[in-house]
Image 1: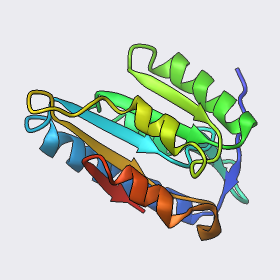
Image 2: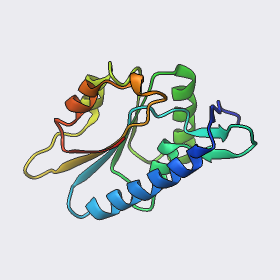
Image 3: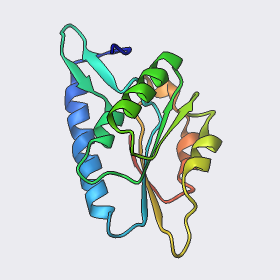
Image 4: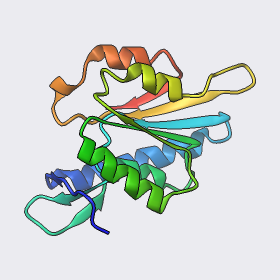
Length: 159
């Protein structure tokens, strides 16, 4: 089955290596301290990409986060491009059908209310911590207000 494969620069491999390490450290170190850990990807893409100028295909941040050793309890993927979100949704459902995944089709800046509504409610008996990966194609695609609103929850950011 062939799904959409956007192209990324060669630096993407190193970036995804760092995302994998950070997500794994975060998920492992927080699993005994929080009842619910939520992974949020504001610019999720298609889930896989081809390295520009080569035939090499790599997993993107969503599939990396889904595949770590100590999985998060919930995943929220936001993507504006309909071709990308469709490919991502199909890839995730095929590879990780049992995980709690949610897909938000739209601009991350305009979808903050929907994203926030998908984060379980924090209480004194149910502690929820978010890890939000923010990697826009260009910085103009991200409004500071988006991060500010998401930070109303217990949230760590990797920008």
